[in-house]
Image (cartoon, rainbow, N blue to C red; front, top):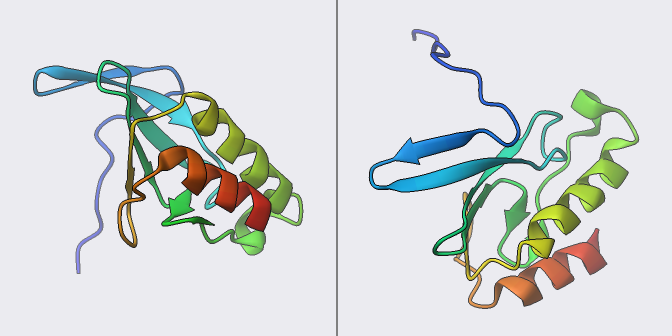
Length: 110
């Protein structure tokens, strides 16, 4: 199996053009120390990937980030919640129908 290669390292605040839309890179460490999400402000879409799963906080790997990673994950959930997305796109589970409720439930659980 061949390894993948990285063509471009993404930076927080960087804006990506994907098709006709622009997406902003948002830091959401917790699942992994360098976890990123993508924000599309015009449509208020947020691709949280593994930061949030349905109505629960994403899995946090303490071995990668140390014991403080749990607190980092909670803090990184608040940042995208403050964006007030209309649609959340997660890597696992069903798409939450109510993004605000999903973040509130994940923050309570965390």
